[in-house]
Image 1 (cartoon, one colour):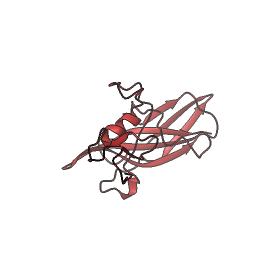
Image 2 (cartoon, one colour):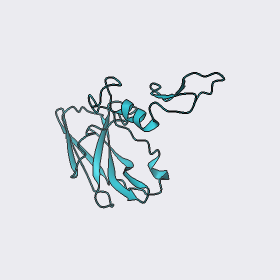
Image 3 (cartoon, helix red, strand yellow):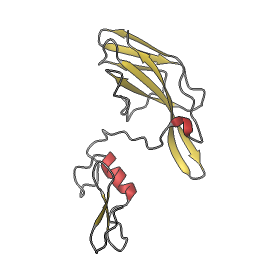
Image 4 (cartoon, helix red, strand yellow):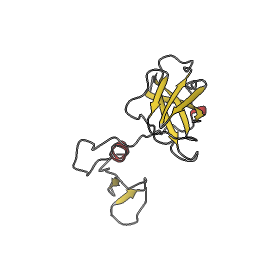
Length: 165
């Protein structure tokens, strides 16, 4: 938070925009949780109560190898392609109750921040992508609901990778 010597508004500099506004007496107009939801849920404006669309996918837990509760990654990823349709299949995570998120990169450098299936995780062990081409890199990550005494989170694993032929 920015400290100011005179009474004024101060904004918390959380990218992509400062949604948290604090008054000089410490009152917070929007708390950090609401501001995160506001940004992540793509609200059209502050007065709107219902998100326009859930295009963004947010993972704030950091490196999955450094977490207290780890989720085992899925096994070997096989990728086959016929025309523009790629079929992915993998062996399951050794942790029970996992669902899977599938990511795609067209150049090996980007595309791993938003899954191809953000609102519909794969329950089984196969996924079909109809917009594929040769050389696309795919990543599959297991995700499991982790319930602890402090609350529950959807905990993701490291990724398993495969390339389209």
